Image 1 (cartoon, rainbow, N blue to C red):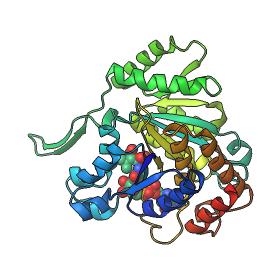
Image 2 (spheres, helix red, strand yellow):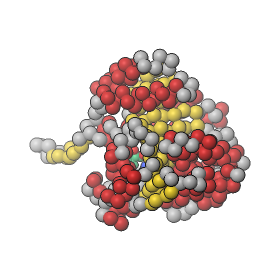
Image 3 (cartoon, rainbow, N blue to C red):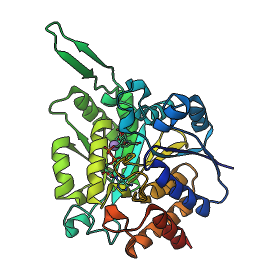
Image 4 (cartoon, rainbow, N blue to C red):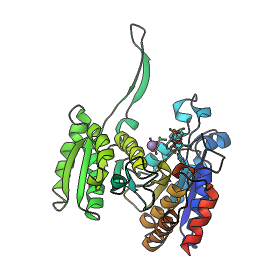
Length: 348
Ligand code: NAD
Ligand code: IPM
Ligand code: MN
C-alpha cells in the first residue's frame, strides 16, 4: 500500500492539506497516510523546522503532500531554524531538483485573472523550475567591512550537470506538450546564466523535435502579462522560477490555483501548492484549497502512475469552477471546507 506523508506545516497549510487529503482518500482508497510536523510547527513540537522523525517519514514515503511553512513569529531565529529551511531541506535531502509548475486558466475564471479575459484565456504553460541549486544553495553570509559597513552575500552558482538534468526534464516535458521550450535567464549580465544558456543549447541536440528559444528574465516578466499564450514550457533557475510562477498564478486567476510537483530521478516526489502559509488569512476558512487539491492530482500522476485518478480530480475542479464555486481570492464567499465538499461531490 503506497505511503503518503502528510506535512501540513503552518498557517493555511493544514487547512488546504486537509481538503487535498480528503480528495485523495476518495479517489485512491488504497493509500496509507502518515502525518508529521514541519516548519514552524516542527520547531514548536521538536525544536527544529525539519525534525528527524519528519525527515525519516518523508524518506520512507512514496510521495509527500506538503502544505506550506512560515510565519513572522520565526523570522528572527537563526536562518537554520526558520520554517522555510524545512522545504529547502526536503528538496535537497530527497534530490528533488525539478519543480513542475503548470499554470492554466480554468474556463470561467477569466474575471479572476489580472489580465483582460481574451488574454487570460490563452495561458496554458508549465514552468520547469530548477529546485536544488542557484543562489538558494550557494554560500551565504554576513560580515562587516574594514570601513564598518555591514555586508551580506549569497553566491549564485550552477554546475553544468545541474543545468543539463533540469534541461532534460524540460525538453521531455515540452515533447509531451506542444514541443516548444523557452529557457529564461539573464545571460546578458550573469555568468551563471551564460553557462545555463550554453548547456541548454548543448542538451537541445538530444531533442531535435523541440523548438528551443531563449529570453531574458526581465523581458519574460513583461511577456508573461502581455501575451502568456506564447509560452508552452518554460525552463529557468530556482530564483527566477520562484518569482515568475507567482506572477503566472495571477494570470490564471489566483495564487490559490497553482499546484506543483517537485521530482527527482526516481518516482518519489513532493507535491505542494506554490503559495505560502498566508498568515493574513490563516484560521479564517478563506484559503482556496484548489492548488493543494490539484497538487494531489499531480501526486497521483507522477509518483503513483495513476493518470486516471489525476484526471478525475482535475475534471472535478474544472466542473466546480465552471459551476461558479469561488473562494474569496476568486471573488466569492465559499469557505475552504465547502470548496473541498463541492470538489468531492463533483468527483462522483
Ligand atoms: P503567501 O503565498 O503565503 O501569500 C501571499 C498572498 O496570497 C497573501 O495575501 C495570501 O493571503 C494570498 N494567498 C496565498 N495562498 C492563498 C490561497 N490558497 N487562497 C487564498 N489566498 C492565498 O506569500 P507571503 O505572504 O509572501 O509569505 C507568507 C509566508 O509563507 C512566509 O513565511 C513565506 O516564507 C512562506 N512561504 C512558504 C512557501 C512554502 O511553504 N512552499 C511558499 C511561499 C511562501
Ligand atoms: C516556494 C517558496 C519557497 C521558495 C520558500 C518558502 C523557501 O517561495 O516554494 O515557492 O522560494 O522556493
Ligand atoms: Mn515561491
